[in-house]
Amino acid sequence: MDGIATGKKPPWIVVSLSENGREHTEGLATTNHLATLDVRVVSTSETSIGVICDKLTSALDGASPGGGVGSLVPDIDSGVYASELIDPDTSVPFLMRVLTWRTGWPA
Image (cartoon, rainbow, N blue to C red; front, side, top):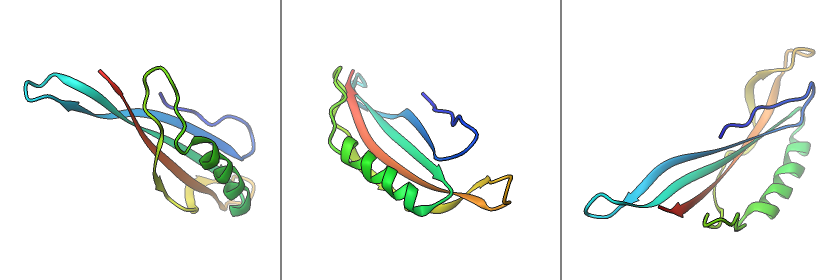
């Protein structure tokens, strides 16, 4: 599942969930699916990105999505950096920060 940013002006929050591994028994039967939840926050200011990311980490760290999916375990925080996206009005790069959580579910 990949999110797509919409709207004419940031902030944009783009969410993607991807299965990136599986755990197996010695007989190669899958026992668990492993996944990563990535949330990209794009804006013109470091402050607005910080506010959004603080709210996201408070809401998602340790959250249990249900349906057999394991709790969200905080993994990576990229910190704020200049993205490859350029503001067409100013020709200045938009700022971005990526938060990542690990999770999984039984096969």
